[in-house]
Image 1 (cartoon, rainbow, N blue to C red):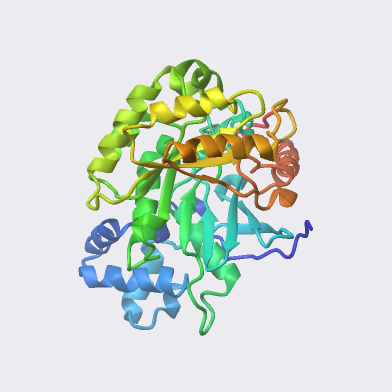
Image 2: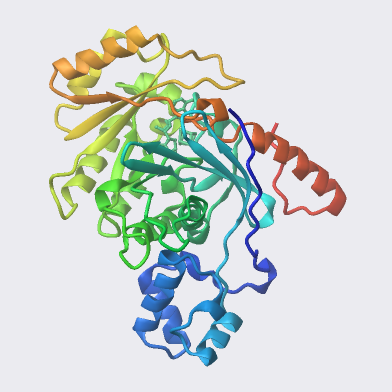
Length: 390
Ligand code: SAH
Ligand code: SF4
């Protein structure tokens, strides 16, 4: 079922005003901002609760803040939420929102309900520059980074759509994975601020074990994470040796597997709790990286890495010749890992009828949008509008 439900309009603030968007400010940054207005830190906590707990975006409605301060805030800042243009609901309950950001670019966010859990898959960039050979986001090139407010807004919008901010609404999102469009570590500061907000009790209060940053292996950025956040980590490995990984994940040519695993171990060792393990993601592609020998190589490679292995059967998309392996092949690969003592799971394909499965984001909705972009570009002769990618 592919069914655009409705269009939600949220007052979009004038981007030309150049005021800070308070939605993306972590607690220390919001405290700093309030100090520039001569206000005490507890004002920052009040604001955080209004925005993130209660979903209130209008300063005027923040009734425990004095009228004078509300007016000063409205002059000095904005609380900006992008617009949801389409909501798609899959037959399996997966929901995908296409969100239009400032400047007209589109990004996608996916919610995957699973029993008591609801996992939100958020995007951190429009497109991606790293061009992994099996990823449709990579194929559209890089357009721009999301700012912290735009990343956090994806949770706010999902909460809003789920009725969390209505009277008596309950928190529903239990997990966030940064596995949507983009490479989070190529957008370091914004992603770290957004992740910290997700885990801050004054904002979304998610458990550190349940906010996961997935990276294809930007090694210096993994090292830089140490001490700045304690978000959980997933590494997109996809191959057990450099020769194959160089082909599938081009950033491996710069930061080979040994360096990547070293940095990963260091990050994990520096977390305050030492019981966490890294998730190793491995997209299985028929005849490419799914042979028994690859599974045996993985067994040897990961011997010293406390990890769980998450196998992702390749999700096909147009423009790619790769194929998804049979379920027998996937099971066989998994069994080899299990027999060697690893925890290995197969990620179930969710929402593929609405192009919401891994690597399928930016499907039809954005193709249409790009045509709109080209149209608008012609209409407005506006150079800043994103370049159409063919
Ligand atoms: N850039 C980050 C996060 C986004 S991709 C990263 O690469 O980790 C999220 C996961 O989906 C990654 O493990 C990625 O390799 C995987 N993926 C991308 N395209 C896919 C496809 N077509 N089929 C299955 N998994 C895919
Ligand atoms: Fe970028 Fe991740 Fe896709 Fe690679 S898999 S192109 S890093 S989004």
